Structures are given as C-alpha cells and as structure tokens.
Length: 255
Ligand code: 13P
Image (tube, rainbow, N blue to C red):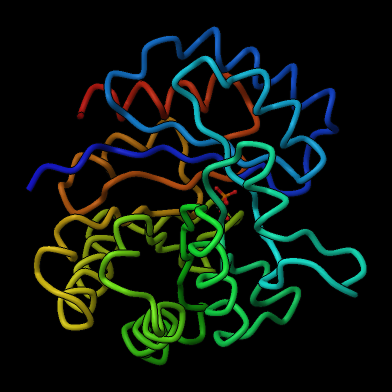
C-alpha cells in the first residue's frame, strides 16, 4: 500500500512567536506546492497561533509539541488539547523522548494524553524509541513495543485513522548519529507488526511511521526512499529554511 510521505519539524524550545511567524512565512513561500507530501511544523505553544494564521491558507499544517490530558483545571503551567484545537491546530506530538526522559513522563500519562487528544479531535503523533543502553542490551524491540502498547491502550481501531507513530531512537536525537536506513527499517517493521497484532493488517498498513533522529537534507532521501519509512520528524535541521525545505523536497521527489 502506498502511503504519502510526511515531513514534520519539531522546533522544540526555539523561536519566539515573532520569529516563528517570520520563519513560517518563509517556509510557506518556499513550499507553495507540496506534491502530496504532508508538511507539519510544530512551534512552541506561544508561536502556535501566529504560525497557524501565517500558513492556514497554504498546504503546511501545524502541530503542538505537547499537551495536558485534562480539559481544564488546577494544572498550573499546562495547556489542554482543547485549547490547542480551539485555535485551529490539527496535530500534537506526544511522548517525545525529551518529555519522557527530561520531564519524567510515564507511558501511562502519555496514554492519557493520547486518549484526550483524540477525544478533542487532534491527530497525535506518538513518539517511541530506545536509549543507547537499551539498544546495546538488545532491548530495542522490547522497549518500543512496551511504549507502543502502553501509548495505544484503549485507543480504538477507528481512532487509529488519526494516529501517526514516530520512531525516534534516543541515541540519535540531537547527536548527529542517524540510525542507518536498515536500523530504522528494522524497528519500523517491528512497530508495524505490533500494530497488526494490536489492531489489524489494514490498520498497520495505513498507519504512517516516521523516523526521527539527526535527519538532515543529506540523509533524508536515503531514509525515505524505503517504503517502510513514511516520513521524518526533524529537530535541528527544521530550524533552517534551506535544510527543512531540502528535506521536504527530498520527500516530494520520492512521493
Ligand atoms: P534532531 O533532528 O535534532 O536529532 O531531533 C530529532 C527530534 O527529536 C525530533 O522530534
């Protein structure tokens, strides 16, 4: 089954609202026609509105980097999925390795966010991935399957139409060490097999699985040229117009 490629940029804690708006405008001008590739940019919360307003008439989509699972309440400093949805945003990254390992988010908390995001009509990107010591101990498959099962607990087959998975090996994030295409494909296949056993072969075939971890314009095409890699989730290289546009164009050539 042919799945359209996805190129998502996670800006992490970079760019003020003004800078984000200017940057989004440059991307809009450079990516007028995306040739069927889904382009998603994920600014920090404060940039969401200005970025969304800048690209809303283009084919670029916008995502948040996180959310809280509760709709409202005494959760100082938090932002709910409903608040994100309310300003027109479609996507949200959940379970990013920095949320898991820097902020201590558990599989259970991430699962609550998954359920909540889908309830309010957002399309979540569930991020999974092993740490270096886990890979070295031969536990990659075990870790990724655990994160996947826990993150998708009680998510229905119908809801899966709105879910993407991102495989981001922690050792490849921000390190310049990209997983080889073979390493990425191996884990993508594990994820797809698990989706087939949790849901069905059809759901597994339809779900986009992105790779993330030191993706650059130079390696994006090689990674995405494999049919198992449906796109990329880009950190550092998403913060420069030329490199992000280069990655997007690589996806367009393959799509
Ligand atoms: P880098 O592309 O900077 O390695 O970051 C990847 C990432 O964490 C995207 O979510």
